[in-house]
Length: 118
Image 1 (spheres, rainbow, N blue to C red):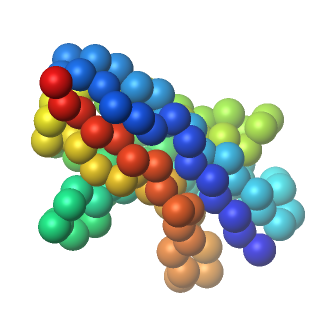
Image 2 (cartoon, rainbow, N blue to C red):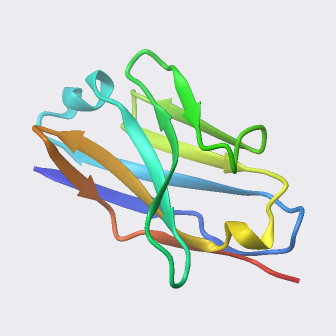
């Protein structure tokens, strides 16, 4: 059983920052620390795209479009993964989704909307 709940989205001006969080409820809870976690996003009228991954050994991977601006982190004590987004651009506007993969299946939260606009 997997439940992912994103939070932290909102309206921000270009150049601003937001911090997204994803709370993961997994059975058993210890599964979280042994697995990679990722963030994806989907802009209006576009396909969902990968943003960042943090592995179970804390290796961080980023899409070129967000590298040096976004930072993914995880807290295994609370089964949370976060995405710190700095220097936001209008093209970062999208619904952001937390992703967990298990047994060949993708699990998604409902997403949180980030709007970058002046």
